[in-house]
Amino acid sequence: MTRRTSPVSLEHRISAARALILETVTDPARWDAALNAFAAACGGRSGQVIALDGSGSVVLHQLTEAPEDIIREIEAFGLTDVAANPRLRIGRTAPVMVPRADQDFVSPEERARAPIYTEMFEPHGFAHNCQIVLIRTPDILVRASVSRTLQQGVFDRDAMQAFTALAPYLEAAVKTRAALGLAQVQSALMALDAVKATVFLLNADGRVIGASAKAAGIAERGEDLRIVRGRLRLTEVAAQEAFEAQMPGVVCVNGTPFSVCLPGAVLDLQPLPANRDGLGAGPAALAILRQAATPAERERMLRMQYGLTQAEATTALALAGGARIEAIAAARGVSLPTVRSQLQSVYAKLGVRRQAELVARLQHRMGGAD
Image 1 (cartoon, rainbow, N blue to C red):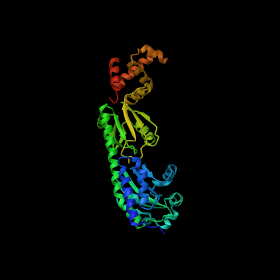
Image 2: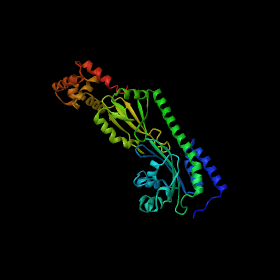
Image 3: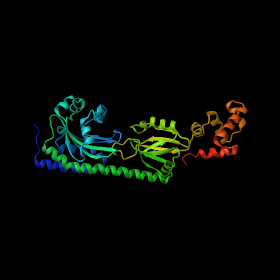
Image 4: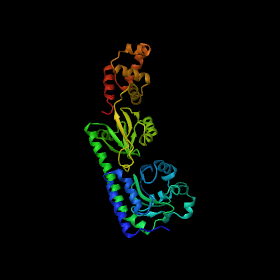
């Protein structure tokens, strides 16, 4: 049997929680305090806001009264798996802004045979839950909830009254935070345009959420890459395969930067500091197009674009750098006829007839993203 709060106490708790929730709009650090007040108003133990991107990855997870390691343990156990987590299953289908308590959709028999309840939710104090979908689009799902312990019991009338009263304020706070995140993206693009940078902004799902003017122009013309269904698509097959293999490791927490050589430029992927309060609206990584800087990058570009062998690319770049044929042969330890033969092959593949034309062509191509 749960103890019901008095009307005065209930109204006071709702008022206190409402004020804290609205404070999160300008100060995300207030989320824990706001969610604790939300839970207290509902006679619960902990409050939660969780957001999943279009691929089902967690981009925001605020859960009070739970250590970080417990939060990660619950996530790893199957929090985002609809087959393992009935709460998420309802969150995927329930009408937006309509509260749903566990007792509405989970029978005692299902609770008893669902490991996420018996091994995670109940032992850690999240036995009973009421949730509400704040936002649902193809790109983002945001849910808020309050959990109660086994001792606190299921959600009673007062708890549901408080939950329903506070839900619109949570919705307003979350949507405002998302709008501010988009505004930050626009500000970043303005700064990138001011310095004439060639940069794409990617969110935690790897989708393009913004591009500088130069980057957008290159993508529209299909030079080395395009934007297809919201994602970067590199025109060179091997480069695309390398990009797809490395991309998930860039946008994850503590991601690792990497580079991909394209026929006309180098694409650097740079992760940004992890931020799980932006609802997936803010950038998680930068994709930067630049000129090839190292001899290895320049050789790779020539081999990709013109089908040169490694030896031919080395010879071409040496000539473009001002070296004489005799010096190239000596440096590589090959005969002069070998270098001349390679040079004739380079001329044919690049469609030029003289050394001066070759140098001009290479200098133009090495400009890459410019």
